[in-house]
Image (tube, rainbow, N blue to C red; front, side, top):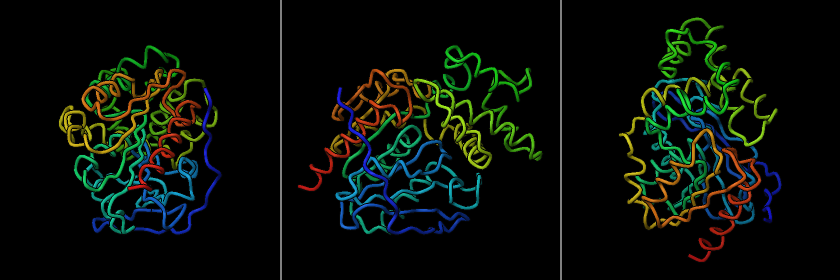
Length: 320
């Protein structure tokens, strides 16, 4: 199989902070061609922040790409804040950013948590979405959360699971998400950071098909881990403020939007069952199951499929 590589590194031509009016400032940046096809990148986590590598999935001569750090993470302020930080707050932020860009419609690109947020946004504002590129499908159903944070992935990574359990007292391990909530929102800064690192590194060390020292190191870094763990846990405790199964149920609203669903066969963070369920509910979207891949965008097959998707839509949307 030929591998389509990333586009060369690109620096933003504009950036800034957008005040939300309820205590947050959202960092945003624009890359590529100011006259190009509008696109927005929705990063993972929640709490992961956008990265320079995410700019490189798009042909910079054909796209005008907006990336932003969601509430509480990356360069957005205040750091690691859980106040006024819900799925629907983020959906409103995306709309404000679209209006700021002056785009009537834009391509929405999201992986992992970003795929859930992309679905929530597109189902709320289908008329504002020109195309969807989704990777590592996650919809916050209870079974998905239990697989990764209670029992399932723990059977595949028992050594790493033991480290994930370590900060939690034995008596609290029957509900790891709730137990971590107490640790991550407590008064003791040392305990908060220890828990944040354990939560964050659990994901960093299980999201690639083969071990990645770079991924592990990123997830261990203190500022990253604190925002990542606190915000993820906050969203998962609340089920993403979604009804059970809502994002798959409401995929019928997307039937007229061109879309590609890309999923790693051996994804241990967001197993292929969820992507398959979405594919069955939304057969109009192209479905690509990448055999030699885990969860990360760095997996060669996933990377290639993502670039192929944006290249495809560059051709299709430029002719509209």
